[in-house]
Image (cartoon, rainbow, N blue to C red; front, side, top):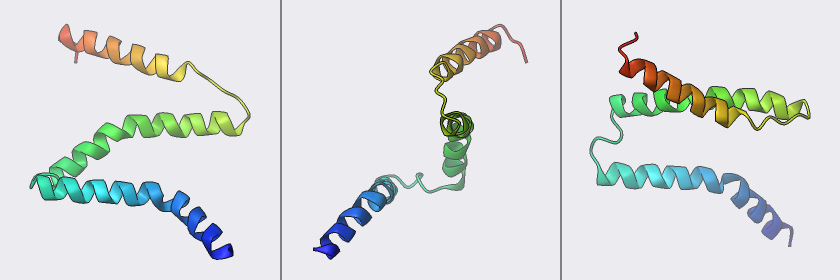
Length: 90
């Protein structure tokens, strides 16, 4: 009985990790460009903004607060940045 509970708990904790590893293996088999250095650097670069926002939100949640405006501010900043880049701002 206890072993079933332990396996269930372990499956819940590691299921996402195993799913990510399985997805990476499938994409690596289907595309020879998936596990290249340039692609991995591209993935890390694109996830860095979300990671910084997630770290900030973690501190907000730990301090028993909630701030729903973070997603709106991120979207607004993206629109402003795209507009400035179209007008040839550096």
